[in-house]
Image 1: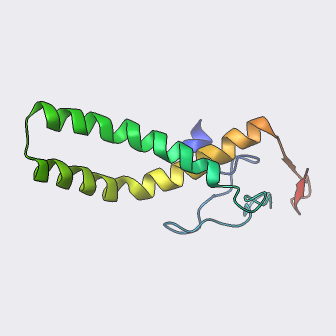
Image 2: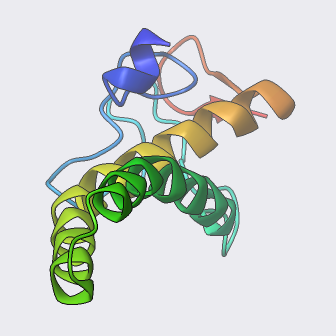
Length: 118
């Protein structure tokens, strides 16, 4: 769980998954594992993002509805919250998908660190 929170490689649990704010590393800088197994690999992370977005936005929506705010304020708050939290949801949905996939179809890194072993 600590590797997910720190956004680390699902194989070695040390390498950074993201090299920049929204830019993913193609390979783990520590163990060399290639993150994207096939074209469209991160499509499943979209479903994780939908679920996370739902869990994040519903409490805000319920609170705003209970306070009987105007439709304009309601929409503005939800849109601003979405814009602010989108980068975190994007990053964590991909990292969570990498770790789920590692559990379902494990890969291990070469002991020399030169690349992955299927």
